Image 1 (cartoon, rainbow, N blue to C red):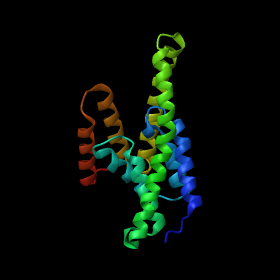
Image 2 (cartoon, one colour):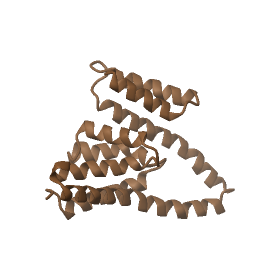
Image 3 (cartoon, rainbow, N blue to C red):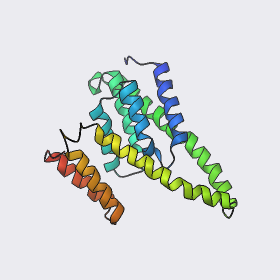
Length: 197
């Protein structure tokens, strides 16, 4: 039986609810706060588990938000003692997936639905157009922070420069070319397999 109970599951759910309301530009922009909460504050995940969960979900086909499900699954498996603990561990990990996904999806989906309807009706207002223009740099800054958190988890630039170089090269390729992101993910996977990062 997991060491966790309803209080911890509720904490997980409520934290993802709060992140959902901050997810300007998608759930991926809240990765720095997820890292702070799951790895640093609660110690529910190790650094490598956090990075691996995001990388696995981003490489898989499907919506970008799937990384939240993988994080929830990993948190649940850790709390329940791992896959070797049997059916109760799998059930608890599934409950953590449900809590994390409902927490991240329900508030933002509801808010987006009503805000999009209002924005569509009022799209010609100068304030609506100004708001849309102002959101672009915020989203970019949040994505840069996400990249930094995922890279910084691998050590300092001096002792382990590979992840930093890979991050900078990937950012430059995305910014200046139309190369599909799956090619960059594949290149990162190869660099990892060869021990470069």
